Amino acid sequence: MSTNILKTITVVAILCSAASSAHAQVTSAKLEAWLGGYREAWEKRDAERAAQLFTDNAAYQEMPFDAPKSGRAGIREYWSGVTADQRDVEFRSQTIAVNGNTGVAHWSAKFKLASTGATVELDGVFVLEFDPKTGLCSALREWWHVRGG
Image 1 (cartoon, one colour):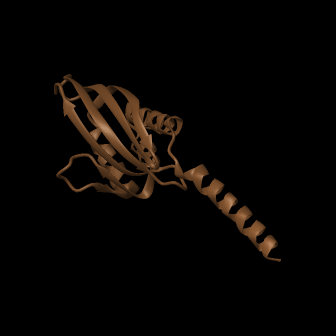
Image 2 (cartoon, one colour; image 1 turned 30 degrees about the horizontal axis):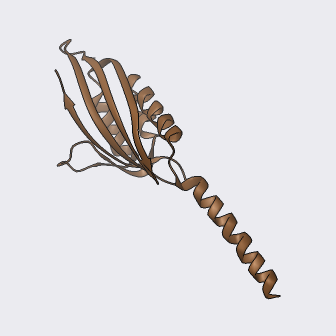
Image 3 (cartoon, rainbow, N blue to C red; image 1 turned 30 degrees about the vertical axis):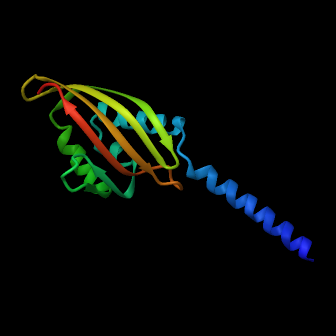
């Protein structure tokens, strides 16, 4: 009887381990797919699409000393405002590292301001944390610099 219990515990442990590892790790491919969705949202200036990349209670930290935007509603509102004057957006990104549920990426963007016609170039880094169950971003922190504008 103890052999059956031991076998059952072993099988359950293996299944639990396989189930959790299937969701727990961010891979370079998963991060690249997420960054592709971010690119699409920004280039189309689609605040709803951007918000859908995040969990319901995500934190979006654009500036290190500002309070993060909270949840999808906060992210949607931020994106609606920040992209309103942008035109001809070009976004590029490259994965730097993935570890557990965290991804780090370098990104750059170039766009024109509709109000002035000025070209703006941004260069930055994301540190992204992902929800292991949904694969959505639960926290975004970014640091960026601007060349013009």
